[in-house]
Image 1 (cartoon, rainbow, N blue to C red):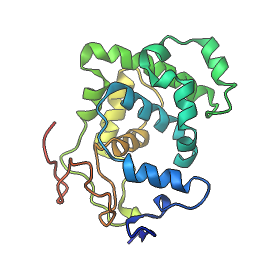
Image 2: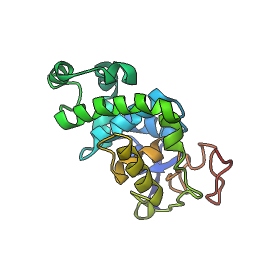
Image 3: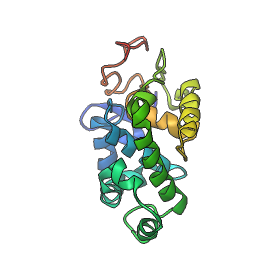
Length: 208
């Protein structure tokens, strides 16, 4: 099995057991946040933005810069970010606290505008959570953890149709994992099932 028993006696994947420059940060994120339900617009916009910035990089890099990202993007307030233009892009490209990738910065601003526009048709929260599957994966090893799904492909397609960018099926699936829409904790992890949304057999506790 791909879980490791930590000094505290709890089973986690190796990446969340601590160690290295960002070990404690990753363990705290894993133990308290990853996979827990997020059902507010700003929270989903933040996580969607961070998953897009993570593309091609390690999650530890993004997590270590999270507070800087929050400061740089006005706490991920969609209304504020949607109003930005070239001046703000240029300013962000000088901010060493974030990932200075112009395409991703521009995408975040565009996605803020798309988030605001979605309010007239149910909103970002309803759109994302509408793609919750009938079953969640039940992986025992990392090899069994998927990186995409039919639902993540459908979500990415719908987000793009609504004006979002940098939201491919892999990014969409990572978002779904991060906010509890699917549970990909390994079966032997102490965090498996902690979202309260999935039964032991992989079926949903309730329909939302």
